[in-house]
Image (cartoon, rainbow, N blue to C red; front, side, top):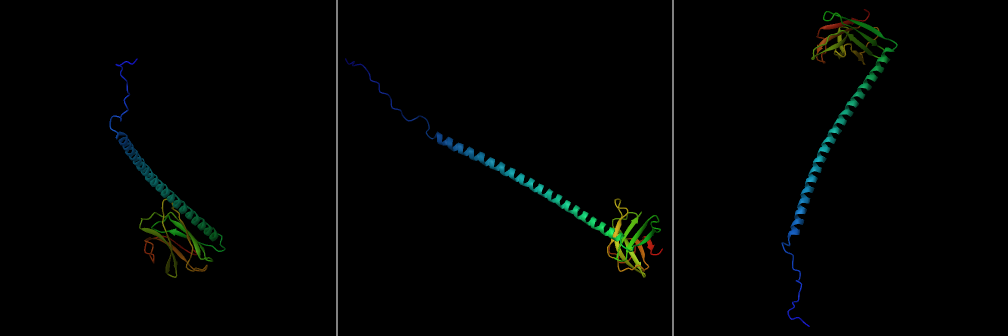
Length: 208
């Protein structure tokens, strides 16, 4: 028996979702922009870090270069000193050595010195003591006086650290064991003085 008043139910078909359908695309676009911004910031920080690292590395390389240069200079000085010591030992062991003593004059009566001559090899070793420190523009000059002619042998200075310098003269101007020689030390302005003009501090003669 059919009931005439019965109503049949028909389910409603699902319709399109409510709201704006473009929202996911906008979110994706925003995420991409955020990721790009963060990536740019990270890259910028990495670049800055690399720049600082490069600068620090350059400073380290520069310091190491300076250290190597200093060490090389020290090695060169040691080699020079060792070579000089060998020459001094060789001179002192020569078969014929003449020693001439120099005395202080009025400018510095307490000063003295000596020169050890090796006529066979034309070289000499000079040492001075108790000479005063000169001004910055002056140097002591050692002269050889022979036949009224003065020849400059070397120049040297006196400092608080080196008050008794030992000066090696590697080449003498052709002296012989029989020559009458006079040596003097004067204070001169500059290194290129051809003849002694300054005050005499030390003087000594062979055979005296």
